[in-house]
Amino acid sequence: MEEDHVDRFLVTIDTAGVGLDLDVEGIVDRIGGLNRRFKNALGETLAEYELTPEDWHVLTPLRLHHGDRTSSPGSLASELELSSGAMTSRLDRLEQRGYLRRLPDPADRRSVLVELTDEGRAAWDAAAEVQARKEAFFASALTKREQRTLNDLLRKLMLAFEAREPSTKER
Image (cartoon, rainbow, N blue to C red; front, top):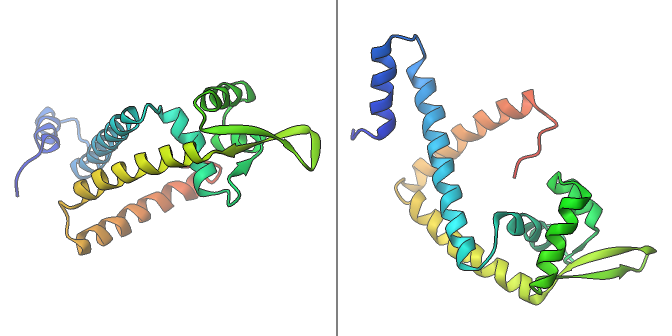
């Protein structure tokens, strides 16, 4: 099998005689390297649509989780683990872009709801479509069977982490 840069790094570790488990180091370094590359690809996609990762994280739950496309700012902040100040800043920026609007909460006159606009939905959908094509291209290095096997193995690792850190939310 062809060597990647991690294989060459593992030779360096082995030669140094530091006693690390090379299989474990290979897993960790490859997952980390792939994660950086996936994040960079998403960043490039978002930049094409003049979105930031922070914008994406606000628009995503409005697009995916909220059937009526509304949420309270407090609920969004909690879901994204943001302070109210950080949430307000992100909402202000997205509202100025026309991607969301604040509406009075019919259940509480003192509160507002955040609603995804048609423009916000269109921007999210367009970026998601481009990113999905990129991710499908990356995954095409594996057969469908290999993709399922890798998913099963990664799920096993994720479950081990989640069992140790049950309060950690992942996105």
